[in-house]
Amino acid sequence: MKILLINPPQTFYPDSESPAGSLPLGLMYLAAVLDKAGYKVEILDAFMTTSTMPQKNGNTLTVGMSFSQIETEIRHRSPDIVGISGPFTSQINNTLKVSEIAKKVNPHILTVVGGPHVSTIPKEFLEEAKTVDIAVIGEGEYTLLEIVEHLEGKKLLKDILGIAYRHQNNNDIIINDKRPFLENLDELPYPAYHLVNMDHYLNNKKIGYRSFQNHAISMITSRGCPFNCCFCAVHLHMGKKFRAHSAQYVLNHIQHVVDKYPVKNIFFEDDNLTFDLKRFEAICDGIIEHKIKIGWETPNGVRADRLNINLLKKMKHSGVISIFVGVESGDQKILNNVICKSLDLDQVVEFAKNAKQLELKTGAFYIIGFPGEKKENMQHTIDFALMLKQKYDVGMHLFTATPTYGTKLYDQCKKHNYLKTDLSCDLFGSSARQPLGHSLIHTEDFTPQEVKEIAKQALKKYKKLSIINNIKNPKKTLQTIYRQPQLLGKYLKNLLS
Image (cartoon, rainbow, N blue to C red; front, side):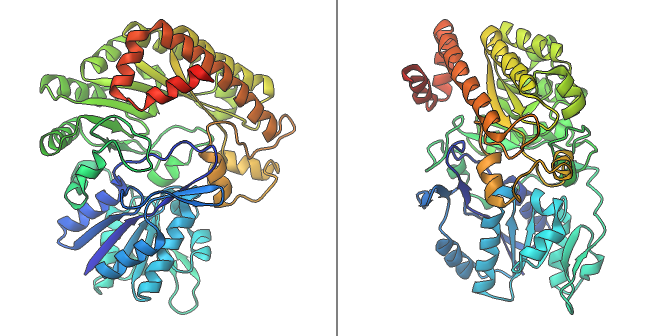
């Protein structure tokens, strides 16, 4: 039995953020469980590759292997099962294309797809994806293991929890009961680092990618989100209950990658890294006590109201390089009543003040264009973001509300006819990845064009403040450029624009 796990190429649109990526962690966890069970498994990362330059197709840019190269790889490796990652709705067309190629190579290959998009709308996905045999809903490690056992004749499909598939006789879509989420994440082996080329991922000069820190990898230490933000679909894929690796597991994991590979920086990609403060502090304490020389960041964002000055000091001592927080709105009423995020903006300001005092690099995520907002509410968010930048040098990362399938935001938009066109994968790609206001939502209070203009004007003001802050804080600016030399071009561009 041979299993090939594929991370498809990704397509980017005009004004998208630059391509960036790291280890295919989802596939590496799947591979680790299969490998531990004694199966022959390989990983083909067709996105993060240096073998092919990005390919232009009209106004889009596809980064990764060409589909002809992927076909050659599948033929050469001759797998019995091809498992394909479907990370985002905006990229699902590439996932489907890989499944078509697998069936072209050998119609008997069992094709399996998992990920957030598939987990949210499994029936609709399989109705469209004629070359996908099984959709995995939710966590996939032990589901995929049982699918492999099914192909060996050891298990019936109807008995595998957390999958959708077609009935053998009439092609009706069958959705099995959900698989309970893993309670003890520590039972999972480390991601299968030995099945990928780590030298490639630790090279900060990858073709076609925005460079991050040198010798950096991503790591996920927890799953699940108990919060109720209207725009987020994470709980549909990973559940609402917060589940986490123990602090000792995380510390052992960090020590493992530092000892075995030249890892110098870690991006914690958790959705709720600081939810369990006792666990989080124990991780910081362990890094300090064991003198693990590592830098780390929180690119997914953490809650500002969890970070008092004493914890920030500990984070700095343990090697934190930058801290990103999710603010979403600078209007307290919108936060409370529209986004449903329990966050006090005064605590965000307190965090920013303390972080500046400790000379920590910070950034914040904001979203505008929610139904229920008016243009003046959006301006409150812009004003709040610019105030944090001017006073405390907090980076502004501005996005527009995207109605992802399965979210409260999506349901509201459909109910009130706020979407003037049917959502397609291309529309998600040309909006969700856009940081400059490419909105899909049209309400009685604003148009997508008005949201875009608000974002455009905000960016102009933000660039001016960035230049002023760079000049006022030359030491901090030089330190940032030293760690991330690719930012020099951005700084110069802002200065000359």
